[in-house]
Image (cartoon, rainbow, N blue to C red; front, side):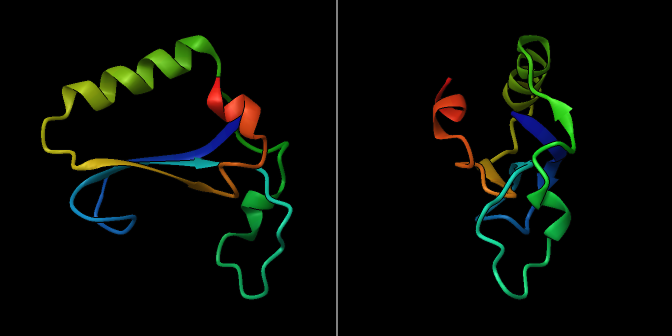
Length: 84
């Protein structure tokens, strides 16, 4: 999986302060999509174990977060890989 963007503290992607992860790849092609650049699954930075550990540490260290938001693209573009 590839990550396009991370917002470490946002109030736009759910209730309270969120850590939002935007994944690349989407097959839906919704009319009026505000994030068409996210459709391309070749864009972004590959989510390897080192990058994932960095993300986990950032989330654990930030005590004001209310939760995590998975967005994109479609975070379920490859559900098996997302589950891993």
